[in-house]
Length: 130
Image 1 (cartoon, rainbow, N blue to C red):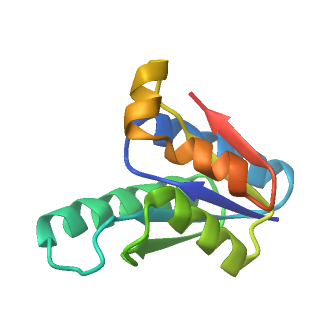
Image 2: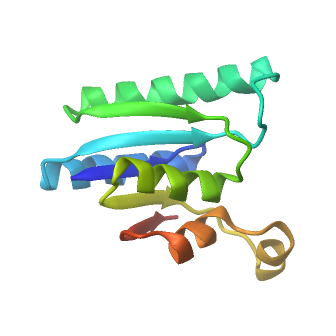
């Protein structure tokens, strides 16, 4: 079982990672952690370094729990929700796990919701963690 985790280093993402480890252990699966950056180029080195550090943390966390893990930094010019869906399709994910932050209804309308996009467009089950 391939479990894809959308990870941005937030507390909600860390909770999603922890749940994905439980699922991977229960179903003898592996975890694919992805981090999506909006830019279409790799010009912002500070943002890239933060993302790489977040992915390194996620990989270490999984390995310490005895779960196979691979990480991917996606800089393809897509919105994070779109990136997660495309990557999940490309790698044949069996499940997607994403963290959601509490936000008012107005906030969701103004800023959109990557998790909402993933839930609506995914070709596999999506688990949300808040």
